[in-house]
Length: 232
Image: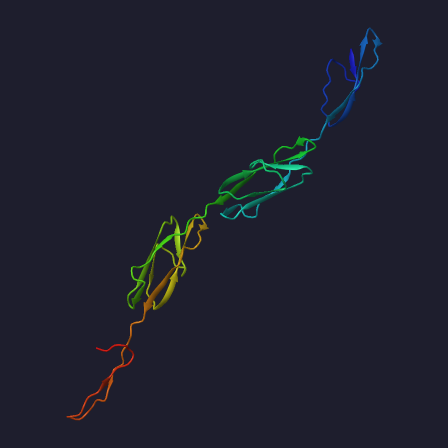
């Protein structure tokens, strides 16, 4: 009969499962006589498995590019390894457009924890391109004529710089204008398009005629006008 030094277990094999360090020897008993102990096997160790790190998700799970998502890990006395690209460190910053499910492990003294519960629902949405603006054929008109601009290349909502929406913008008020537009798709808004400048609706001039009427027969009737530049 083989008797092990660990717990006085007997048998031809010994299995150790508890965390700790060990020095193991054994004796052999035959017909009531027991041998000396074998040379001890030393340096045996079962290391503790670390706990999974605690993950703090970003305050906003869904953002629009170029915004990023940053997760932080705590409770790990060793190395945190993230499921995203096998990156290591106590924080992970995601910048590429896409959807993500992220977990992490903790490695201490050569032993690695189970992965923590994954953080799901993470998403970076693509930022749409600015719409293309087609200006009116004439940039300057006289009231009551109008100026119409159209936007193309936007799969969502076009918002003009005057806060109106739609694929076209009609200007009818006298004044000068510089007009741009953005495109919003799936909650993400593009940069503004290059502004269309030099737009103007001019006021229609008014005339104020006057005369020296009434006059006596044989006299001269004088008519004068104001408020214009040319009189016909």
